[in-house]
Image (cartoon, rainbow, N blue to C red; front, side, top):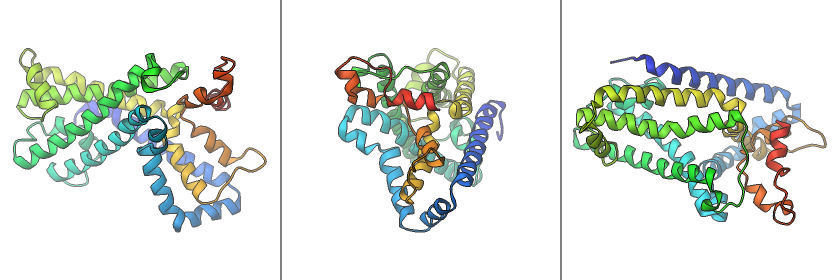
Length: 305
């Protein structure tokens, strides 16, 4: 099976966000002053490039600074960011190694289990399936913390968390649905074909014992694709725009570009790089001394955006 309509929401969302990020980056680059353009160009071919990749890995994926300050909160961010990165990376490798062809479209890697339901019967395939289940379990552990944090921030060591706009809430809901829907879709498919590993295989066996697993899996593949597509489409309109923007910011900063005495491209990128995580609320004296928690930097950034 080479194509199924349920992949369309994912494809539309993915190509939309890729085109948007490229276009936005080009606009930001063109708005830079000539000296800053030269700094950024030199940064891509010098020491700054390696420094930027290192910082992206340590801070955007591992969240090293947050881990040092608040291990529980850092683990939550790391499991979602780094875990999703690993899922994409090893999923792409999986599709290339075990798929029918190389250089597959992104949807083939994301929905690999749907297009290859018998995968996992050989020793090598089962070992790889174990790795993919392990990564998914890693992400889900962080997702549980994220959901708990939204209702009780003290569980992850925060006194306050940010109040979200409606679009942010919709995007957050889509993000929360991505990984559970993948788990259920893969588990039901694995249960129908007797494949999977310790997570999807075990859950799939249980579900298949009282459900028509093959038929029940299809709606969850749709939910998985719709969740991804919705998140990608809403990303530029919500606080999650910080995900691609902070990568651009890191390259700009390591290339020597700084904020001037007036607002410009660099300051705009800085504003959009704020994730509105709410950590600044706990650190602000207005919060712990005066009990005011509505005007911190996170809300200033939100207002500026």
